[in-house]
Length: 470
Ligand code: 1PR
Image 1 (cartoon, helix red, strand yellow):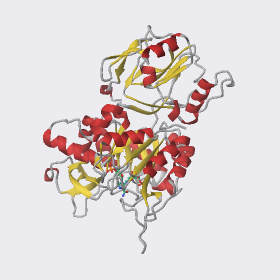
Image 2 (spheres, protein in one colour):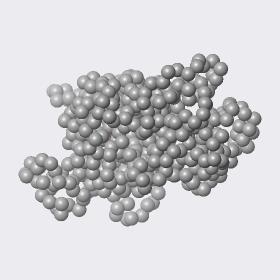
Image 3 (spheres, protein in one colour):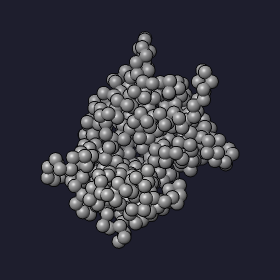
Image 4 (spheres, helix red, strand yellow):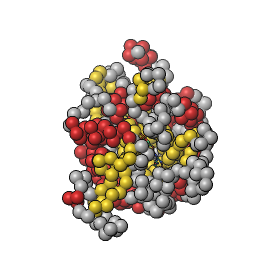
């Protein structure tokens, strides 16, 4: 399409490029390259530099500095928009006539360009909530939009994210429900022992979007058991949710290679592709990432065949989250295990002063011989773009995040870490952002049970001086 696109753009026909749609207008890109771009805008698209302490990929809600009137950005003002990328184009004298806004993440990079009817944005308007939808509306109906609206918000840098998580599974009646466990046990403590049912996935996701969630995650918690492509309701959930929810959607559970009863082989890439086509922005891999990391530690060879490597190669590592399900194991001293230990603030049941975090698979059912620290470092190397860090001990307890664990992991890797498990009050969110380098905090139970609304979490974080999207 290169020639057709160039002609279209040179004739000043309406054009809106999004993310790679902006990058391809430049001379070339270093991503999987160098590769040539369309060469309409001078400049090379290069990788963010993670050496100066900024986590790459740049994932989340960030602010724009408007450089010139671009019309489609008129409603944004100082509100956040959603970015997810590892490569960016830089402003220069040669391209300044194109640049309509920049964003700062370590350096100033190009957030949008505009010349006549030709627009392109590095951020994702389709994932930037109502302000993003206004960008699309202004592009589609340039004449019918009113003058600039007063702006609200005080965006200045990458905001900390608040994520709502929906653990989803089929209940005993065969309906797909949102459930929530205590330390991963999702069955009611009753005679019937039924799966706890906290609502319908599409409805709840829509509600959390309206309430201000910065992202919504679906974890198909029995995906390790059932084949996800056989689990069509999950794909339907994604399709219906993405019709009304304009923030990023992550989906996980059961992403692995699979051979069905008829002997048909499905690669994990096919499974992930189906999720992406149904509306997911990121996929999350749990058990299969543990097996891949164990193999890599044993052989020191990157085969390129693991689900993690395959999916991140095709879709980019910003699209691949690794979900870790660790459990705290107490030991007397750091030399008792070959894994990274921490000194615990409160001694263990037998007076132990140290602990390591053992990774598990199959929804916490099986402990493996690898620690969360070791796993996090290896999956970063294998292509993970983000880590969703759960903690079985804290899950559903409402006593706060496991700060020791989150600090350990967020200091060990240079990709973003999502803190998960244990949120019970707004103060737990400010604590995790103040004491660790987590980029986002995720909660489930307190939102499902309507104990703490998402807006209260954000109001509290703002009061504590922590930047969030409002
Ligand atoms: O191994 O690739 O099939 O992925 C399975 C996925 O399902 C993993 O991401 C795993 O974390 C998740 N999962 C499996 N079993 C359970 C379970 O609960 N029985 N859910 C489960 C884990 C963890 C959280 C939870 C937080 C916050 N849920 O993400 O939402 O702990 O809860 P809280 O705020 O109520 O404390 P694979």
